[in-house]
Amino acid sequence: MDNNQLKKPEGKLGVLVVGLGGAVSTTFVAGTLCVRKGEGEPIGSITQLATIRLGKREENRFPRIKDVVPLAELNDIVFGGWDIFEDNAYEGAVHAEVLKKEDLEKVKNELEAIKPMKAVFDQDFVKRLHGTWVKQEETRWDLMMAVREDIKNFKISNNCDRIVVIWCASTEIYLPMSDVHRDLGTLEAAMKNNSKDISPSMCYAYAAISEGVPFIMGAPNLCIDIPAMWQLSEKMNVPICGKDFKTGQTMMKTVLAPAFKTRMLGLNGWFSTNILGNRDGEVLDDPDSFKTKEVSKLSVIDTILQPDLYPMLYGNIYHKVRINYYPPRKDDKEGWDNIDIFGWLNYPMQLKVDFLCKDSILAAPLCLDLVLFSDLAKRCGFSGIQYWLSFYFKSPMHDESTIPEHDLFIQYIKLKNTLRKIIGEQTIDFLE
Ligand SMILES: NC(=O)c1ccc[n+]([C@@H]2O[C@H](COP(=O)([O-])OP(=O)(O)OC[C@H]3O[C@@H](n4cnc5c(N)ncnc54)[C@H](O)[C@@H]3O)[C@@H](O)[C@H]2O)c1
Image (tube, rainbow, N blue to C red; front, side):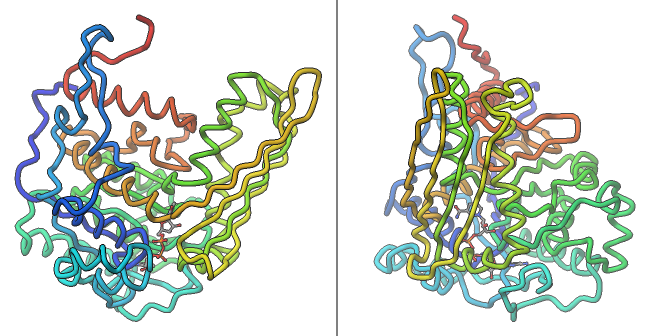
């Protein structure tokens, strides 16, 4: 790209969060407000903390990304969004029980002022939730148009220069891709016919993209991962990215699997199980929602290990993923992995990982980075699927001719090289 075309981040950036009252959303919003008040550190955020090497190693140039890449300032962010419950962001955060009350108090006034707009919701898509703050328009198309109005009104009333929409709402039931999703015309017709092939998340995404607004899919929903949405985003010159934030167990998987592969160690079993007690865990307790998550979590290993090329090492892997709803743990997920590997002369070995994590604490910095990078991508004139943001996703979106990249470190190199290109610096191939 010609970096002279890059528009500076002037004015306010509106960040509209779908699922505003949820655990991830409120941890992201409250955390960002704390950081900008000097009341907390943005740990886990590449945009806020990471450095980037520029030029040759001996030049010793390692500036912070945010000092050389023109990203929006945290002070310029205005938050808003939608939820199926009327609770404001403070009430949502208290309910989510991720951040301590003493931390929420520091930004209580700001959080209370963030009230959700009515949601697009269909209970058939999230069976465990009973939404009460829901739009009543007749068809999917009308609902989508109502979301467009919300975006326009938010932009005007908050004096925003630009908007980004991020999905942090619940995982919808598994929706297989069908012919309806392959073409923009058929997708639009299905929306007008109020077809069940159109999920609520598709209504938000179509609305955002039509308004020229980048859209980020943080759940494993089909949503923008279809040719019709790729067409729309190219047509409207809008960057999109997804899907399913890569936070805990899958992040570890995409670190460990490349390690086995580079050392040519074999793998014959990977059993991953989780206990989780927040609302996300409750939603995923429904087999139809779990199926969406399962497909996303299972997709990782094959592309990293290439069993076609290495049948002896990876041709016969038993890979199982389980999520169990266990209320006492709330947002403190425990993810266990039992990994059966084998080495020299087929001798077996085992590796156990027990990750006692905080799901939303891991996800919040990803939300911040994705919002800031998507806004950057839009100002760069990028459109369609943002492959360079694969780093953040369990199931990085890709078109039908592209193979996804799952290896965390290759994804990171791609992210940083894209940033180097954006600011007119040499990309680095590590051959010096
Ligand atoms: N936390 C992580 O590490 C992580 C990682 C990957 C993906 N995710 C995904 O992020 C999403 C959010 O997770 P969470 O723990 O915050 O869940 P949550 O249940 O706490 O929050 C989801 C919110 O979305 C709202 N909602 C549901 N359907 C909606 C709709 N159609 N429109 C508007 N709002 C709607 C719910 O009312 C709720 O407030 C889930 O889909 C989860 O699978 C989380």
